Length: 277
Image 1: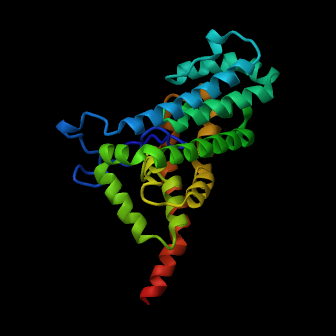
Image 2 (image 1 turned 45 degrees about the vertical axis):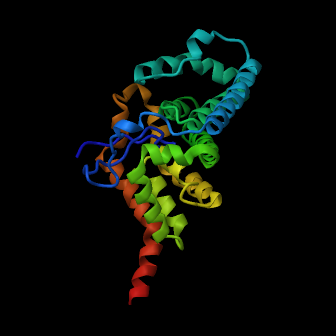
Image 3 (image 1 turned 90 degrees about the vertical axis):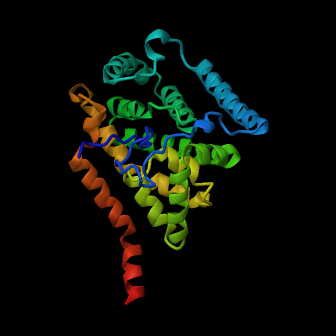
């Protein structure tokens, strides 16, 4: 089985375990008549307004940043080579303007998480390269949780038609699983966050639709993202030795993540066993 790519925040890129085509976990091709995004004018206007507000806020933060050679530091890396160059260009800037740089970093991370823009895994690696493990993990987990929470509320506003349009089978599967685990919902959500069972983007969007309370969503995200964040941030310390993002999550790492995930749902399994006895 090939290694799986997980995006943090963390699995911010759509990654997970390959599933058979007839499985509810597998991606389904869009129907020929479903090429049009199923949003009403009000919903589209609401989405555009939220995006505009976030964009203006991000621009205002940018205006407060100290002047620098923006051609070199305001670039979103697309691969590890770009990331290494960006890290070298940002090292002095991050050291001289530490607090403002962290503000800008977190703002960009939250913006990308909120609007499901791929690439936050590179920001997680960058956090490790610039700040070390402890501070890097804190920054990534806080930023990823904040962005996921913003995505949760955005989906609560306009997400139902989009999720039903993009992942109809997966949404029905998720809704059925949530209905079976109402009593131990936090344990199940922790399992999903720790392991690559479902993409984080889908979890962020679908959670309000299947009536997962925000307090459970928030707590599961805050705690459940720590293991994957630690792996990614720690890899950022040896950025020069990293050959591919896929190397972050080899089979050994995936086994460890699933082991931690199973520990989180062990109380549920134990309680169910006692009930049957």
